[in-house]
Length: 332
Image 1 (cartoon, rainbow, N blue to C red):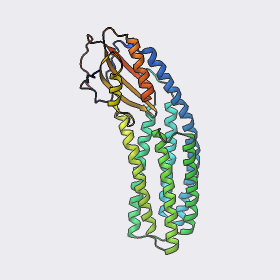
Image 2: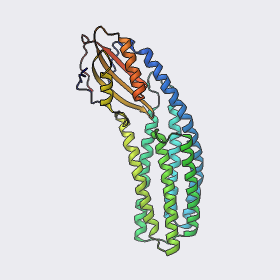
Image 3: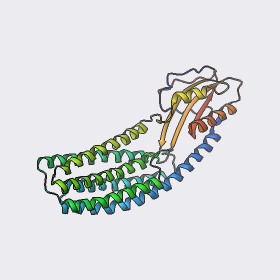
Image 4: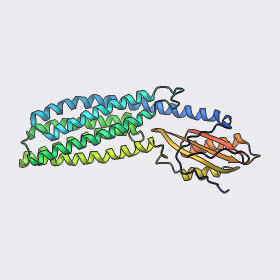
């Protein structure tokens, strides 16, 4: 069976959502949608618990490292405490995002507040860039005139910070989904960035303690800042991709198009759009042109089942059409 592709097949989302023949898919659509949201809400609870524990740990160590940096005159410690401040803020913002995401949809916001998680990830990624920039600027100043640093005290405080960061990362991984949830991953990257900062402070402290070479402090700080930037770029890139209604990275639109086209009695698949509402919640819309004599309900059920089972997309909106049906071309 050949697949006739329209000029719109490369777009990511339909802004049209025609509802001619909408009654042919309402029952199946509602069932799948509620199942997906139930699973998503179950994930939110674990993510929330992990964030609360990590927030308490991070805020406590942030205060310790800040005053420790002032006492020891260590930029590595002060920069790490500054990073922890941004971490505490990002963890709090991520918690707020999950609270918003749990709110029910409304007539004005038919998808609810799920996108708030993506906005939180975007903000967290941006603050990572800001923190890294501040660290690099301060490091440059210390290259010009490196101050004396109380290395022993600096190492002790950095070790405490490292243990706290690892503990926070452990609870985020154990309680939450740092792999698939971009909001959780952005918060997790903040904590990992803290851990790198603590490791950098320890290494710089050991070098200064052994060799009295105080350039180690700003050099290590710059290295940590660059590592932070690398993780932040990944989060920002994915957040922008989602907000631009991009096709999820793990889904091949051409493969979805081909699979739908192989369903019996399907003559054409057009206006196929796949996008992400929030982490672990993708949506799809398309039009299927089928043979005049085919049972629309049977074809529709096959299509919904295929999309859910093969591509794990449970929020699908499919319009069934016949060759005699015609509508105006869509803009996207």
